[in-house]
Length: 191
Image (cartoon, rainbow, N blue to C red; front, side):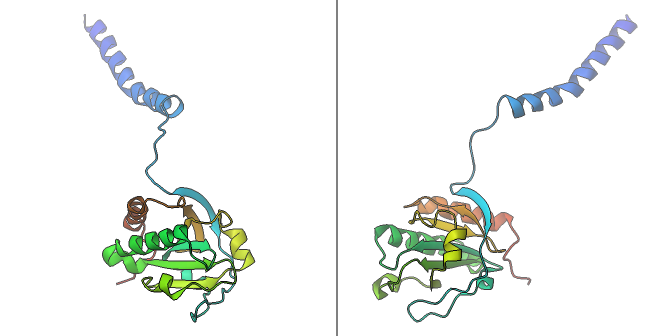
């Protein structure tokens, strides 16, 4: 009787030890999760070149080093801003403002791909937006820059790491950015 009880105890102990391992193999190889948490598409990371971008509309030139230490929402598109462009600029502004006290950790940049100068009407409500003329090396480095209409998120090391669809859902862009700022110490000031 005690020998049978000992065998049952040993079998139960073996089952308790092997069950989590078997369950993890099943979960990894058979029932893989298909959902994702982020709205934007993770890319790269694609490092941006050190090329200096000429300022547009009276703004100073943008040095690549200015992007270091902050998350930057970059819009790449022509200077004649259409509805998609206006939506992207609005989305970047609202995403930055929605971060509250962390908004200083977020920068905004419009890389103009042609010789046009953005109209003052478009720039009127765009606080803290840097506008610079595109350099071919930047266009080559930014994923989906040629597609246009997309916001691209650049990390504090100067790597393009996420892109959002054209006419992106602003609330979901805000949510992605908020999550990044919450869990990443990058771009926080040393106080």
